[in-house]
Image (cartoon, rainbow, N blue to C red; front, side):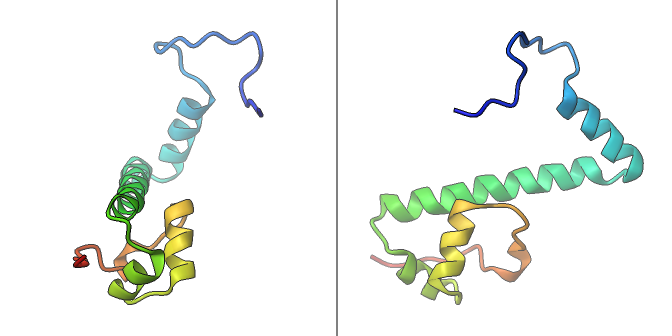
Length: 98
């Protein structure tokens, strides 16, 4: 398993880490960065929920993709990677009858 943390690091929630430092740096460069970060997190949650709901209802990616007016490969990509996903181009209130 690949680890990005040094071996002798202990996690102290009060001590800033590299991610905290990056967030500060990016926010200094772009004051909207915290909102962009929050939006990205919400997209990941939404896409993860989409995949869980589809699987839980035993629906195929093809069927759900058709209801979303997109392709199965696009839906597969959405379910596996939430990076750079533009949900403004996707329908989010899709109801698929079983």
